[in-house]
Image 1 (cartoon, one colour):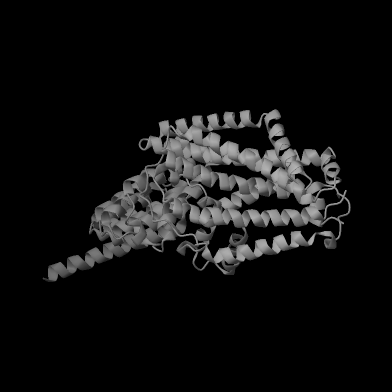
Image 2 (image 1 turned 120 degrees about the vertical axis):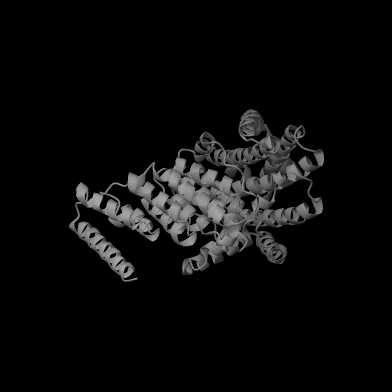
Length: 260
Length: 256
């Protein structure tokens, strides 16, 4: 009988095969010699060595990338993203230290190209926020935040988490409150209450509070409450509570000032 | 022995000529050259290097594929036309048949790489072209031997071509896959990674790492021939011998 894989491969049996004993001794000896030669040769074969990370090239034009994608731009976008942080990772430098060697201008170009290839994909923005934006270099961090901000507007419903993260980075890592406020305002300006949670839409209020702009926050919260745009009762209660708290804090501060 | 082997070898060349294999290869290389020109026109810098690398990569893939398909198709047609059993009924050892076919295919490989080398000469220094086509010749030799072994073992041409193509692609990406499984990015990926790594290491014991055979970098910059051939020639000999031995054992059991 033919082996099952042969039958499967051919769709039909090719008839009987001669027994193993019919194989000439010379053929067996050749096979044994070949296996022995392979066994002797293999220890001399060097294991594949990673090549040193090459400088990141500028991204090719989008039509070229679409051509190379062979009709699967989403797949190509994902593979290219792996390629972006693969070389550094392959030489044992995974993490922020590895990204420091990258040309961030070109990197931004690549991430934008990947977003163009796969507009619904989150990976380029995630990479910008959580990988390439984690480098210990404020200039590079700001570039990543600008990238996130620039591309948020095209699809706020999907991309708001990355802009919210950008607000966090600007506020707590860069300690740049005006930038955080700017990003938070951008987030609020395009956020749809149906898809973006209240805490994200109201981030600019908390940034303003951090900046000591209490009066501005009170005005904004009051405006929000009066506008009737807040349909969720919990959201309304939270903001009313926050407003009361701020007014109380402001009153206490005034009393203390008068005692002086 | 010599007469049967020579006759078979020449019959392979005649079949290749009559089926228009040389013309097909030339057309495909010209298409590859067109693709290379397009790539060179699109890149902002290093257009010459891009042209050379693109042409080399496309030409290699197309030549390997066309030669493998030719070998599989020729052997299957010979078997289906009952020529193979008739030839083997002659009072000759079976390995004469295998040798004749393999030498015929090797001749096609030699002709292909020489023609490709002539096409590449205007674009790169002769020494670099010579080294590159030597690597490509070794690679293509293993491809046609693999195609012959698979075509003799599997009777369906489609399945045989698929098997050769997949094995070839696997051999080309084997080094990259082995590096990937050891990348820090995959640390802590789970037990499956250990299994995959072990499986790839086992495959590397059998399959040649074809990515090291004729890298495009050899065309761009001078490479030490000793370093390049130090891996290339022994690996080709060992892999070729292994394929030859497997083919012989498998073919000796065939009965019609």
